[in-house]
Length: 158
Length: 158
Length: 158
Length: 158
Image: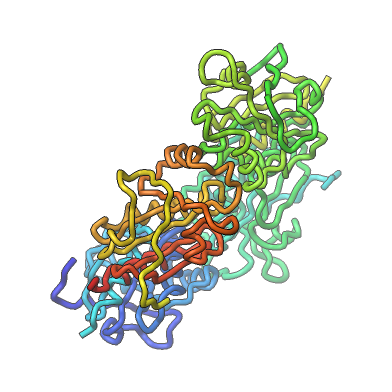
């Protein structure tokens, strides 16, 4: 996935685990690993989020920023921000998590639509220049993900 | 755990996956495996509920009835029946699940208090006569649980 | 599997983890769980033997005896008793293990042939009367195995 | 681990899964991942070798060469080349495996001694210039290993 334009911005109505809203622009210069999930999606709970947590623990925050994005496209009444907050507490998720903004046509929230995600979990890699470089729907093995992240870390940022 | 009195009744405000409310009295004659859980409890999602699902698939329903009981004692706003319903759908939980009735003093719902449960997950075994015979807080290995259930199956019911 | 005759005797050329050769006759009155394996069989190392170890730790030895049987039907030069002894040490296998006796026509050792085993791992259950009651080739879930063992424990022995 | 000298050569008495003996000199220009193991070491069988297999499947052989090295320092009679050959077949190990050469003082084979390994499994990373860059005794998480390998891949070789 070679890109000449920056990744679409994150449209979040609310953030957890951070004092200020997160923007990709402000993260320019670092690699961003974004885990798009739903709190009631078994593949997200069993695989995607634990993997994002391992990325968060493994790499230096000078190089890699891990973000969660709660992309609710079904069960909107069940997966509210109130429920999400309890979920993040119980699952000990420490990285910033945004709530993808509802709106527009259809059930897909804005960021999910702008990234053309197929579902959850989706893991997105953004390079130091702010370009989207990979978007994995479903499982990615840790070995491959570690390699992909390091390949982006080793790129010159400017 | 030897009992001379029937197990406390289940106080449920609502049931899922069943057309009628479930009562222990109506299940007399069969072994009951009751999984007390919270939908945002990682040990319940990762271990307790999958194990209850294996019990549900392994034993004949002529012998063993599996029940879930949603015992919310924290994050009450996050773990509402609306959220629970979506959770049961996404996790493909097919056995009947009751919502333990809030009420009385303190945060513990009624059945949880009447059984003196210490938390979730708690797995409770009730014999064919309706007597509580085991109450496991936390993990029980499958091998031991299979043996405990079969020991109750083999008891004469009257 | 209903049997009216005792299970075939174990034909072992050698035993480990026991001072005396084991015979099924001497174990009459107890349930016997026999794990037939080969030390270089991945399914035995990854599943069958760890499960036999869990059975050994879970049940009282007054009720259940766990035996291993090394049924070498391939790679005979590689899976010698010298190699087996080191294997049992490294994998911390504490229950008695017999070496199924080579001999007769073809590569199958005697006990394996007498039990008509299809391969390894095979788990065999023998009841208190000495009758073979189950023979599982491949994986058996722990929950089901726990139930099967308890069903035999609860049978009267005479 | 910064090195100015090439990694010690591999002293192997025998090779499997390759027509010719492997030398580090001949692999100069590529990253080498060397898994030192013993066939009866549970940590090697359960973790180290499966991980080496994943490395073998994940990276291009233009970039990364995976080698096994059978470093027998105990149970020498049990872990002979005859047994090793059957082990490699049964566990479907497809990358080249050398037998570390016995000799000299004490039980440690030569390569193991020259690398000052502490035991098995040990995973060694050698860069494109032939310098040893990492030596992990015990478990390395896949995520971290993937990153370490990619960091070496991205280095210029000359």
